[in-house]
Image (cartoon, rainbow, N blue to C red; front, top):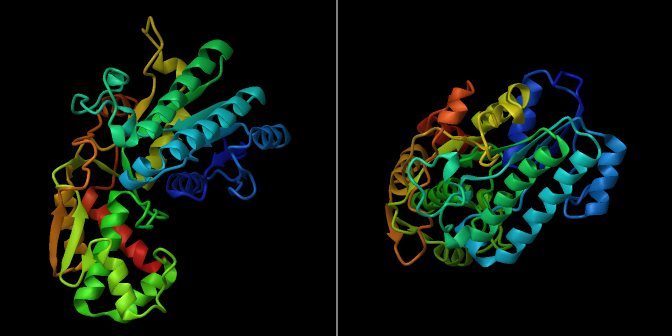
Length: 356
């Protein structure tokens, strides 16, 4: 890539895509093709083909996806598999058809088996059953990896796949119905602090910016209190899902973006197949190689937010996979490693949340 290369970032407004766009701009790239969902529905094959035929992007970052936490994955299983398959099928095929020089497909470490060895090497893919709660999403992402590999082998394309661990950072999703673990804990902790401190002005300001189930800051104290209680948030007590024991590896989204740009600039598919008699598992884990318990993450957030109340865990709710630590030796052997440690990243995200 060079500064004038035409770069298409699918999903540029989300957590992943916005971080990649920011990183590319910092590095001097300036020719971007950017389309919101309203401007281009990536599940519409004809619209995607028309866009690629008209714009001819040279480099493609496929960061668009239908994502969510345990509750959303478990509830909307058909949406997760259908939408993700459609998005990636359309974009990958269009990139081949209209001659993109390179494509980077972003998946997730949820592709690995529920009982994968820890840390999880790339070669453990498809060796045993997946975690049930996010199986549809994981299957879609596995299909994306195999699609990239297959197009490379049949058509000579240069499509690579990366599997980031649990991401958090600017432009994260703080919707309590669909958010992942870190933004959910941060927002719940902030709301619990507001209740505990009786800071109703701050609490109403939060709901005005990010209504919950359509309820904003103009609602009565009684209605707001009742609403928050359904999410385990009350004065002096915060209830979080699961036992708190599962381990999670967290990666600052801007670190992830830096890794993606690095790989797009320096690593081609051919380099990932050297010495292989069967070409498979060419994807690259992106992570820190470090993890901590959800209980530990919650305690870190509690200290950062300044919440003085209690934290409890609802063991009747699902934990998800117990541990998902990535083996990052392949990534490190290619010359990249993370920079932002967890405590610093959590503090950065809370400050961003307060100002956004």
